[in-house]
Length: 176
Image 1: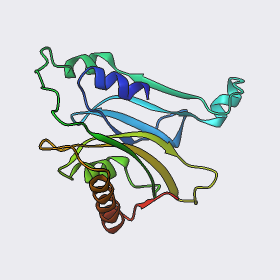
Image 2: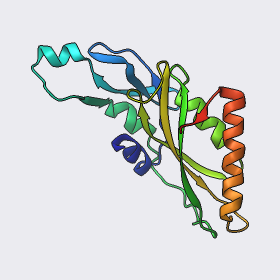
Image 3: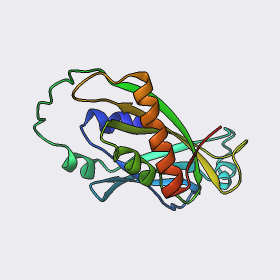
């Protein structure tokens, strides 16, 4: 959401790693990482904190970014990147994974396919209709070839290969 947009505009690629922070739900908290350095934290406010401060909203999230760390990561000069000659095809993948599996591992596996241009995690959900010990992760995947426009059938085959590899190597399946 907001953080991904911020990092994208700054030309940065952030990773999110599970974390525990006082006042935040342990299962819904992450460190914000850039090049292996922590530059912030995000998470959901712990229910007890909400009670202590008379906060009635169902879910309250926060993020903290350390600007000094962020600024040192931003490139002063941006390199020109030409626009691709052929259009990409965007598809969303809603996946079901073990709660303890970092989203970064799933993202890296998907990015390992040569015709995958970009992978973005845009939703993580645990709760109703998700089995205990599991989480739902939804990724937006952009498929693109530098040589030609990919057909719908080619993208479907590529996506099927990705799903098979996710299940075989990480135990991750398509959410139904």
